[in-house]
Amino acid sequence: MKVIIAGAAGRMGRELLKCAHQDAEIDIIGASEAAGSDWIGKDIGEVIGEANMNIKIVSDILELIKSADVIIDFTNPETTLTNATLAAQARISHIIGTTGFRNEEIEKLKKAGNHAVLVQSGNMSLGINILSQMTEKIAKVLSDFDIEITETHHNQKVDAPSGTALLLGNSAARGRSLNLTDNAVYERYGNTGRRDKNTIGFSSIRGGNIVGEHSVIFAGDSEVITLSHSALSRKIFVKGAMLAARWSQDKDPGYYSMDDVLNIEK
Image (cartoon, rainbow, N blue to C red; front, side, top):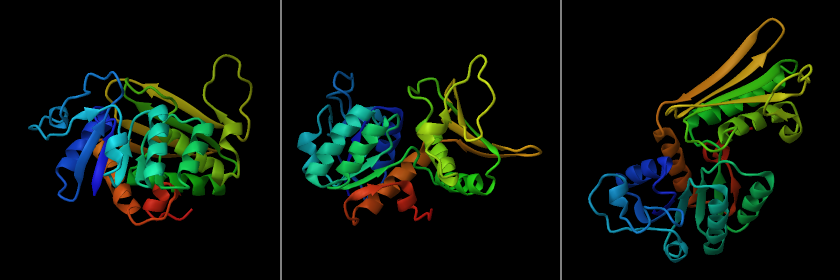
């Protein structure tokens, strides 16, 4: 499988390069970084502390994409949308772990899925996707419980709430037959008034080098249920991304999620 790693010098990009380099079934044919990055023109071996691998980091993957089977993309919404267009034109798979998309940007990704296999998820770990399924089911059964979602990440994360928190929020909303956009509360300050019954609240914490911690709290009158997940290593996201890349190779064009990859029934 011929792979391009987009965002190669980032936290996830480095882990993806290491994993792909050690996998005999994967051929890294290219890697990209944002224009102006100090890594442009440097060999990917330097990024992961290996010997020269004769693959230079570029800012434009247009020439590389013709020879690729899949792009694995942990960058930013603007770059990912550009890559989605290129992947759709080349009819190659696009695995997206980028977060921070607006609703209209998600719609653009869905359109790209008309022409290529596109797998997009706020979190590619098995554990989070199981947690997402449980959240939806519990939200449906415990319809009178309040729902709050907390997330904690390292101090370099630029978007809040996290893509994973939003994934969990959407699961809770589906369980209640609600639209998350209309019922989410992302911050509270001052005299907020009493909590609305349909509110799905979010709290974000940033500090240190925390990989990722998420909790979904179901609070009733006499009991509280908390579902939690802690990421101890970014390898769990890499494993999911690689699984999605392999899964995508014999699929028809479409906009898919990790539920599809893991065959999780909604």
